[in-house]
Image (cartoon, rainbow, N blue to C red; front, top):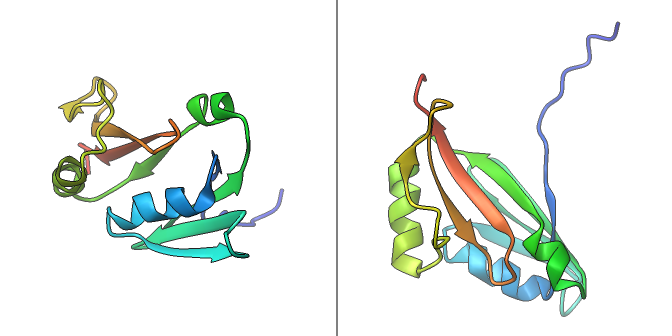
Length: 121
């Protein structure tokens, strides 16, 4: 068996308008980049975490998509999300039975992003 290490995963999320997705995540302190003008593909980074976006014309694809981002201070990013008004209506900050404290946001097109902190670390 190979001893190859996986270094990281970068989710590639759908967007109806990549520039709007990038702007949205910049409000949460991410740095953004995009290809083309306007971008049909782009991404955001913050503290080593990275999300990419591709253009789709199918809103339901956005609404069916989600990803998780682990953080070291979920309360801090939760406060940022409240300040910019992007919390999921049912995504309040709470401790989950699986050992995470987490909350969820919705991007402008319905992609769900859950931010969580492992309570055992």
